[in-house]
Structures are given as structure tokens and as C-alpha cells.
Length: 502
Image 1 (tube, rainbow, N blue to C red):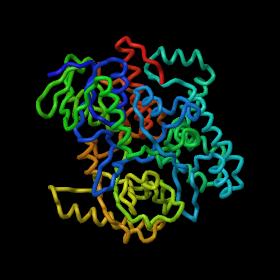
Image 2: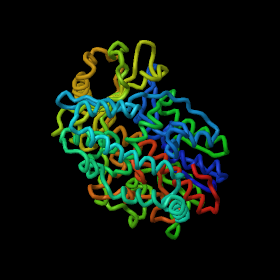
Image 3: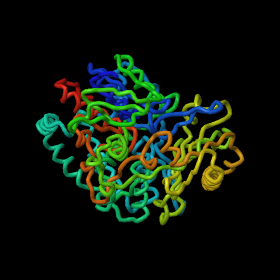
Image 4: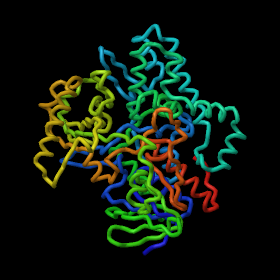
């Protein structure tokens, strides 16, 4: 039995961020992680000389102060903690391969990207510029604000006092979707499809269901702070946050599974681990999804989340491949998205995503080899595993892998004969290793909902807080980092502590 100021459940990026900032501020924290490595969906694993990203490999938030204002959260957090994460600049966010021979690369250089798009749609030149200028306006507003909690009245009042016009503008944009704004400026249906896949690439929703404010961050910051890859793979981010926590006296325990959040008179008071240990704290922070937090960890059924309130994001079927370096043509970009048919691109498995981060960081693969991550949407309903080493399940994985590799050969001819290592993961793998509801990536807003309807850091249980992709602003590494910063801000207010805004 231990007593801390704060217990954090889960060492995902959101949980580690709030623990690091609170520990830096002087509150005692202990973080329990059931897995053996930090980072959650942005962790790593190593096999036979290869270092694979378990999930994300495209990262915002490492820009300089001059590049991205308050959105370069990773840079600011690591500076505050006094730890370093070296990164490599990626000149292209995503290279899209779309139907009808339509290809476009979203370059770091904004004018280069817009010129490529206008070359494909010359009649929409004015609309393209006006639309992406609107995204730039949202970005300029958000990066002028210090990061704080939307649940802190004093923070909101200070923003309104210092930036009344910008707050009013942001409130206006908060009620708009990407699709609604795009159709104000653009008429060409193929171009509108491209804007759909721009949203799908990171929000897993089409433009009509994607909040314009979120898009203003992701689709504008790529031309400011840009995309960078941490040397040593995605796991370098979680590793650095753990280093920062321990540097200031905090504790992070791996292989420790939390089975229950202990409640007393409607308040969260501690946790019970799978080994029977009980630990107590003044506040609990859950980095689990809202369904895992209130459907598993909190046993009181009165707090269960209405399943119809949000959509559940899909999971992934993933291939982690070690391949011969010769397979990549000169100038091949790191991140790609392949859409074969606009009629099916939003169906499960309809869009292919791939990344080859060792093209940037050679430490991730042996000499003469590269790592290649190929993945597509899937759900647990598509998979059945009756017992370990289930032959039917393994055969289904092999068939799915073969089909996905064959489809990827559209842009990497000869891939199937260049594979040195192949590791496949299904939504059941995600569910097992990440302990996530249905192996998913949190709740998605339904069409018509606005971004402010995302769950916030506070919860219906007193002294229980939430971070991660279930919270505002949503999915993505920089988004869950934001949720951690916001939660740290809110908890400091609870403890009567000031915290200098990032």
C-alpha cells in the first residue's frame, strides 16, 4: 500500500505527459503500466535487428518556437523536463496515390504542395488557396493561445480578455466541419474527395464528420513545425517522458496491471492491481479509453458510458515487414496512402497506409534492409481466436497479409519477393497488448457533433480524470499530448498550484 498525490493508469503518451508535468511541478506521482514498454499505441518492439513502430510514425510537435507557436508541445515539454529527443525532419507528410492516376505529396513547403494541387485542378486555383487559407487562420488563432484546460474558468476568462476577437473567431470555427467549409470554396468532386482522404488519414472520418478546428491544426502545422521522426523510433518519446518523470522523483512501474479504480462515496481514492496490491492517491488519472475506464476499471455500473453517444473508431490489421533496401526507388517518401476506389475507401480494409521510417533513421534496420509498416482498418468482429496458436486464426492472418502485400505492390513492385521478416497484428493483438476496448482507438464524433462535445479531462467521478484519445481534442500523438498538458493544468488548479502555461 502506497500513498501518492497522483496515480496514473497507463503509460501511453497522454498518461506520461500528465505524470511528467505534475511531477516536475512538485506533486508525487506513480504510473502503472501493464505492458513492458512505455508509449502505448506509440511504442516500439524489436525483432532480429529491426526496430518497429507499434503504431504511429508521423509526429507533429517538435518544431521550434518560431515555427509553430504553442503547438510544438513535444519541444516545450522536453525542454521543461530537461531531456532531449533528437529528431529528423521529414519533407513530405503523406504521398497520396488516388484513383484516376491522381497523385499528390503534401510537402512541408506549403507553396510546393498548393502548386501540385492546383496543377491537377487549375479551375479550382482560387478556391484551393482560399480554403487552405481558412485552415491557416485557425492555426494562427490556436498557436497564439497558451495551452491550458478548457474546463478552467480562469484560463478561459484570461483568453477572452487578451484575445477577444480570436476567441470569437475560434468559437465560430468550432461549429464548422471540414466538409462544410470545403464546399464553400470548392466544387470539383474529385478535389472534395481528396479533402475527404486528407481527413481520413488522421481522423478516421470523412470531411463532413471532421471538426474544422482539428483540421486547422493538423493540416496547417505540417507547413510550420512540420513532420519529424524521433531517432530510435516512436518509442523514444515515451522513453524520454519516463526519464523526465524519474528525474524529478516520480515512479513508473511496468508489468503492473490495474484491475479496479477504488471508489468511496462517489470519489476515486485509489487503485487495486491484479496482484492484489492497493495504492491510494488524492487524484487518479486514467489513460484507458472511456469504455475501459467506465466499463472495466470503475465497477459501479451507474457510470457506464452510453455506447450510442459516440462512434467507436476502428482498429487495424498491420504488417511489420523487414525488407531489402533495393525495393525502394530513389526519392521514395516515408509515408503513403493508397486509395484504389472512392466507392470503397471508407470500408474496412478499403484504404492502405504505409510508412518506411528507416528511410529517415537508418538505426531502425540492419545494413541493406528497411522497415516497412503496412496497415489498414479492421475490427475485432472480423477475427476469431479460440486459443493460443489457433491454426485457423494464423491461416486467416497469412491470407490477409498476402492480400495486403499484393495490393501494396502497386507502388512497391516486387515487394512480396523482397521480404526478410513479416509480423502480422490484428485488432485482437491490439486488444491483448494495449488492453483497449475492441482494440480500438477511442471514440469518434458522430456527424453533426462539434469538437467541444468530445469528453474532457474531468469525469463524473470526483477526483478521477481522463487523458488520451478518448478526450478532447482526440486521436493522434500530438492530440493526446495536448490532453495530458490540459489535464496537468486542471489538476494543478485543484491542488491550488500555479503552472506556467506551455
